[in-house]
Length: 320
Image (tube, rainbow, N blue to C red):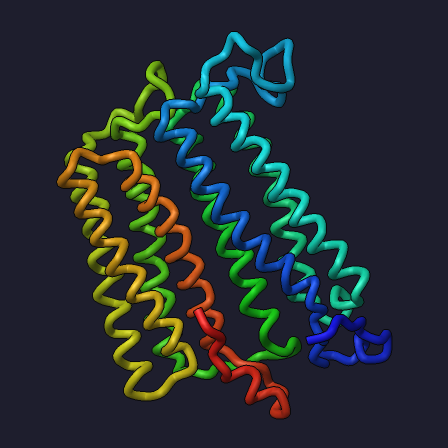
């Protein structure tokens, strides 16, 4: 699709579908990828014991912005994650600038809101990261830091999903009871992720040898974390089966969501039975974020634009 700007007249029309410039599409995808990558780099910081590699914030040490020769490789890992925060922030800012310059911000208030949320979220994340260092890697703050990163991945995914559909008013594309079942499944996912964060906070990967843990029984919480995970898997199977039989719009994303959960369960069982190897824990963290992103798009696909002329676009399922 060639780059284009939305004319003021068209932008003023409520619900008028705005053409999305190719550059905006590209940077929106870059935003989603970078939000996912920073979870991976943040996990690497924690899983290598590099959480306090830079003992100060916003500088690496009280005297130096960057790691010094006296510091270890842990400092490079931690500082690399801080640099990744800058990359994520720059990409989020570029998306906001392109939304304004192309006129899409006026025509698509939904995209503007989502873009600004990502930008503000990145700033908030940097501040939470600083608090994490100041508190000596308090496990509850570290857990909150991860969950907020995961939510930003979901917002970036929502931006991509809405970008591929016209704006304006939307109506349900599935029965109301199916929407309720979908939200119940989302709740199961949220509980599973929360319990997973608490389980990790009780486990061996604290981010630093001297950092405290949350005091929970890690072995017990591994089982508690698994229970809502299995409920989530069962509910997703039901949702996908109904969508397939009734040919509901979210069915393709439901299939992707189900496949991701099977992989996630497999990784979870592997890490639990092999002493929580660092690499498997990191993969589990990233997959949780991607699963939440797929769930976000799945829920959004339960509605479609009111504009009848845009119906074919609304019902088309983009490739995963």
